[in-house]
Image (tube, rainbow, N blue to C red):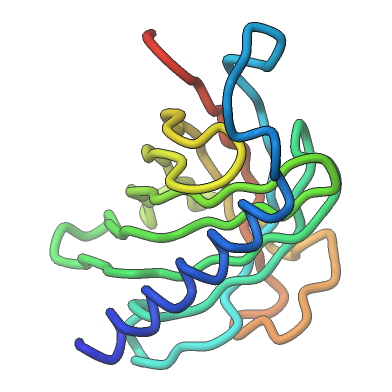
Length: 170
């Protein structure tokens, strides 16, 4: 467990540094900057360090939408499989886009009993563009995945989804 926490901190720090460096000068929010944004992602797991558990598993992928085209990097921090068919997890999602970058800390509720598998996402942007924004979203399992997924531990599947970021009140 200590190893996983240390790994999570290293990944979070790395993602935050990249996000902050890519968005230098845009962290402060003015009236001209958006109060909300929509981003898309395609992601997959690249390792299962605690197999069969996904806790500690790194993720890779592609992003788009308001961040611009770019890369997804993530880490499953914790998981709870005691409420089957629900899979509950906490994860860091890093969006490194051509326009903006950020890191979000998210709680995922995945319904493994649905066909296809779907999930809801709730969280907060912890670093980079739109820091402090609330995150809501969802994803769906794609089988087969419509894009190449290098180092995917569960080929040919991936997850495609959207996040909505919102600063301030409702």
